[in-house]
Length: 368
Image (tube, rainbow, N blue to C red; front, side):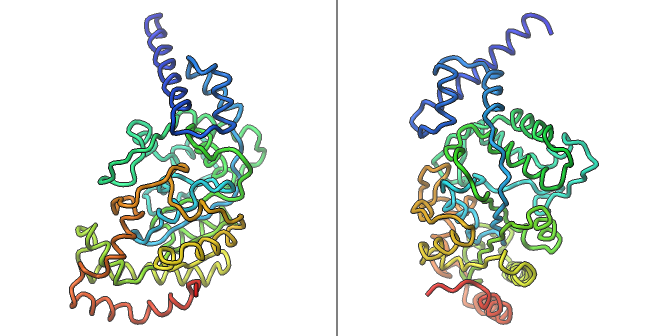
């Protein structure tokens, strides 16, 4: 490497370090121990990226808590529930949809322990973080509000690989613990990084819909939890038809998918029993406190009022977001009733779900 190139690399590192530190002293971030430590060691001035990486590596905390997975068919409010968990002091909350599926997003990743750690990281890495790092996080294409998201992917890789230095006999759980440790360690703008955590929450649509996925999930996390939201098929069909007509415009195909999801929820509940919780989406919206009190007990955490407010990185979210964010947009769509579904389609939905819907309702948690 010639002298001119070295100077360019050093200048690039310096500018990135300055950008990150300037973010930390901005209005978006609450003063937490990790941020205070970074500011103190950088003297709130120029901080080369290599020094920032060293500081982060030295102060990375292992994330070995079990995973509470929120999963069901899309359009059921899964990311909205995860946004209610966001900011709780006893939780690490994965900030966007969990995208570790491999070789396709809807498949739980199969890890071969005979592979090299570099290959494990390639399989699990969520490249969406690069987009969020450049452009900020948005809940959906129609949402005008963007949230800062500072994440160093190369730092994540380094934390992941370093994790195994202290592991003598590597297990599947070690691989996933290394990933969660590296993710939350490289997410520098995380306002809820410090303090003891009991569980990690994450949302990933459709992962819970196959036997194999759930078998692999509970193999990695035998003490893990699965939360699946069950929606009224008429409300669900109305919402997804409006927002995803290219996928759910055919009512017969859409309801077949709803039935498949409901049967998967029943199967998961029967097989994994008290590790699985089925919640009506309508209850989550209309009886939020009762539902979140129950889910706090289900996850073994203390109830906190922050569980009643959807947030991103502890920052309040707007209530009029799009379907793609699957938060309040879905709430509003469900509240609007079945205005986008014809009478004939309503009859079709009722006929096609007449056997499955009562069965799944018999297994959901009841809130009086």
